[in-house]
Image 1: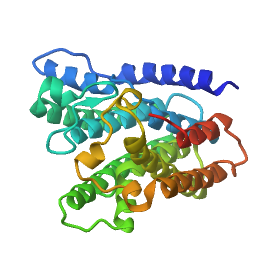
Image 2: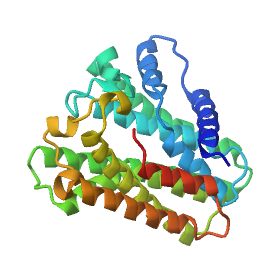
Image 3: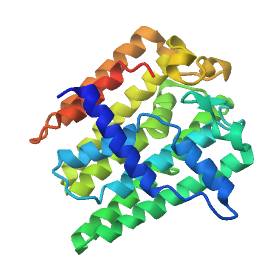
Amino acid sequence: MNFKEELQKKTEQIEIVIRKYLPKEEGYQKTVLQAMNYSVLAGGKRLRPMLMEESFRLFHGQGDVIEPFMAALEMIHNYSLVHDDLPAMDNDEFRRGRKTTWTVYGDGMAVLAGDGLLNLAFETAAGAFSYAKDFETSGKIARAIQILGAKSGVRGMIGGQTADIEAEDGKNPLTEELLLFIHENKTAALIQAALMIGAVLAGADEQAVVQMEKAAYNIGIAFQIQDDILDVTSTTEILGKPVGSDEKNHKLTYVTLKGLTESKKEVARLSEEAIAILSSFENKNEFLLQLVTSLINREK
């Protein structure tokens, strides 16, 4: 298997899935629909829906029931980015090599675009019930929606964002424990949603779902630490967004606390543990293993 070719192929297939669920840009609300689509179609690795689909395949999942959740998770991820870029948050003008949503449509419309994507995500996920032919499948879909809500909400991503804002404001001194809480919830939670939902919809048992949650925690923390590393070591041209924004915003990161060398070691350790968990199942998904491995050395 040529990993780069397979990655490109899967990314293109996911792009088709996502586009299928995006709204038509029409009516009096046309502007917010344009802003929503602008943010989702800005590119990106499509990592979360890809991890979800590969988790589904790891546990012998079949059919299209996974597709609404792949699109929904990417909508939630992008809504969070639209809001993160706002002047009241990180105040970033570029993402993925082009202007952020608020700089194109204004910060008020960007807020509405993020809100619109969040609501559309759950509307889209609920559409998976059309694939349910029995009570058991309906139960899996219901649990998947619950996971999606929990991991993206106040006990997940939004909880992490809250702690992050308060740490920046100086309300809470940033310790390693608090920083890991922020990373676990702000970043890892959506990756946990991806791997857990894929497993649940494929019919994996509870122990396997818990293991996938743990693997996703490691992947998410490693991914965020790597992001912190790249903010220090990369360039705007490679990264597609301004570097040094953490320092500009006086944001303490894992790199700030531990330094570059220890941060890189932690990325490797967490990734290796995640790979060990993903390799422990009877069915082997080689692409998933290579995908996780590639996160260690990514440059953008």
